[in-house]
Image (cartoon, rainbow, N blue to C red; front, top):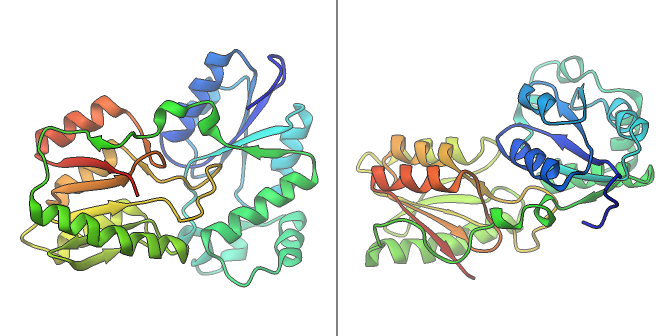
Length: 282
């Protein structure tokens, strides 16, 4: 990211710890941070990390753009999850979303054929671009969040687990290509669960319900044409806690394209639970 020291950086924040990590990193650069937190998703802690902070509904595009324009933001970072199922699949969803006219017009104009994650996010990115607000990758500021190849934990994989990682990798890549999800859970080269709208943690817990013997493998990868500005695969302490509860044994992720939050805490928790974390190159 190339920006003058005085030029504010915008952050559109969703759920999870990633927006907090990104906000702290922006503060370290000395650049002003303008944050818009999505209601019912973002952490209130962001208000103490930003120079200017606003709340906005997920379907209130006019307010979101107006907040950034008012503060002179031209470069924007996206961080955090938006729980799509909470909005698209609720009864009376228009009443719960209360979309403004700009949001309605934006999605009508885009005429997307589906509501998969990339299609929805690209609609948002294009709308910002029309107003001169360019979405950039938060990883330009935080390259150290990406996992390098190798075993992160103490326990090595056995031959069965290595075979399951290889088997799960191809499946997860295909699910990513279809923009369905990024994770699969497998055991003995049999699929237990595939991530969709529920997210990785609930996918893992579902695998544990279906595999009472535990010791299964979770593979999480980037999409084949992953846009590193948004929806980058992310794991952290909550992922390991889900693995522990479900009695999973191995978490395999894609090296160089997966974000690891709270690295020391995550690895320590995995070691305590006897879980292996391995970052694999294609």
